[in-house]
Image (tube, rainbow over all chains, first blue to last red; front, side, top):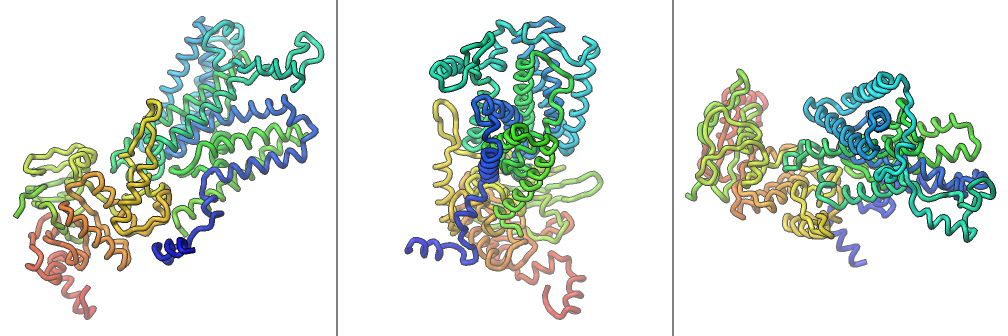
Length: 374
Length: 259
């Protein structure tokens, strides 16, 4: 009692004390947490018997969510730094094709193809960033140009060298490679075999895999997603550089006046987004064993939607990696869940549009609360 | 009189065919508040931007602590102790007070060889500095957006002082503020001056200038109309010089009171 009186007397009498609910509401992750609970609750009620929550079902939506998470973490940090990258989807197609062309058509070892592709993609990311900084144009326009340039180059290079738009044979080429399992491999296989032997998870009852567990292990894709979430979250909230990311997106001029290297921060974030797209592409190529010129279509929007559902502001300067990851999880669970629930899959897009709209409205409201605007 | 910490001699700045400054001289001694007055377009902003390294002067010299100064960008001026607080660019509203306070100068601690932002130290320093300046924060992670305009200016001033400013340039700190907030900011200026920091205060409000100023320099159309000490000049005279005489006098007589 005395304490509350003290704080009251100390504060400006016109500043109302905020309730706990309001304080919780201005955490960027809140919408994501709430949405995740709601989505799981919904599917638990409607699709419990469909196998969505069996080990294979869980693995199914986890992989899809992990894919979304990987590109969402990159898009999230970039959006907080105040920029967009619409070329993520094209970058995925470009990176996959680059790995396939370098290894299959040009005969380089897979590890070298992967490393060269990462360097190439991050260079394109840096070029994106450099152009945005140099020209002062909105990143929306610059990266929209790269959406077309990269997609066009991908299709052209595939057709010009192999007369095909899908290049296969990557899996065979990756056999015995040291770097490829980092993207296409599975971990904890022993644990799952052990769990299968103990009857905790299902095993195949016939065929050549008889006795083996239905889940061979955790795909590296999921490991990458978890590593990126942890890295992104620590970088953003617990480091000096994270403060610079917030500052660059919040007000680039104010930040540069106090000595924040805004240009460097933004260019590095463009490169990080390209890096994430490249991880996505490499894992996908390893999984399918092929690269296709049309891979990654619309992924840039899915990444941005995940980030926005996760509470980041489109205008930059505010957001959370955990929130973006939850947004991506919602995305993956709903996409696969509608399939399990036997709902017409075209309704997924309706859902997407509605949830995006709701998230943006909620975020605008939250921003007004933080900044005290009316 | 103590030796000036910063001296600007015959500064000229041309933007293409426009002459923004034509030979302006100004000096600042530690512990004084030097008010720079002038109407819109008089060249106040251009002058302080040359002082803080945003612009390079076309002609003229700047001396800092007796040595010639060549500023390449705003970072140079910050590193030698010239801090500028811009009216609307002081703070980022979406970020917390602590994050704003340490923006660009984050304290770090090493955990397993990796540098992490030391939130604990940062929060403690912020709370202490804010209390010194007379602002009681609910919590250090309160967003700057929840502070009033005057409080934001105060946070920016406290930040500049904490990071070792010897010269503090305030660009119209009171122009968007109410009466009480203005007096708070002017009180902060007084505190800072008493710590031995030289303050350049830009304003076009004579009363605000008279409240804290030790010396007054009036700019008009890119030229200095003169520098006067406190007590040597009245508010009316300053007002008259700023507005360039005649026209304002006519307007005042038709309005029947002082503008």
